Length: 223
Image (cartoon, rainbow, N blue to C red):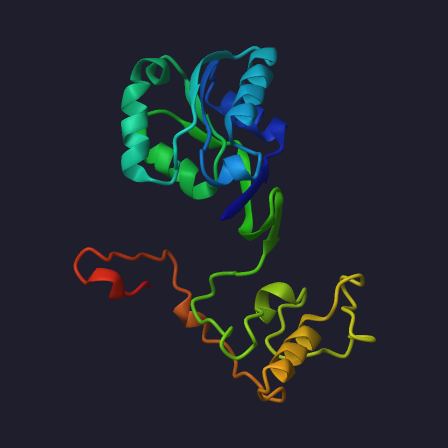
């Protein structure tokens, strides 16, 4: 799940001012941003109120089921064509992928209302933790299912570092050292705790990534 946070509101207003917008259409997201309480129905309603209070005419709004789905967003744009056409600009309360999907679907200036923060695991309702950086070269098979690159504040592939004290991290001091956790888990599983991982091949994280499974089926490869 993509975790988002509210973009600095003044920056949103500045973006709208940069194109001379006086009327705005607002788009949320029914998936990740709704779960993160940043782009669901309540947050879209709040954005509408804030825009109105700032002197903008809000022509309408919508919360697509999934805002990063190109086909669904184009269909949603056609459903709201009149109110989108009446707007000078669009504000999107979704992740960066959602904002770009909307920008592809409408012929209006489109501005993000949120910041994409991280790829999150849902720990429990309303609580998210970053567990993966989508590096393209997973090491979880060797680390007992704990990602050191994401979870270690220093991003160290091997550890513990010299700052670890009594099993705790020296950067985030109320948090156990992830490399101690990895060693403990591997030991519990009867596995080699002294293995040193080789340097990561960062060329495997090429941008922009793209994947199509249409021709090759589920085995299609990402790049």
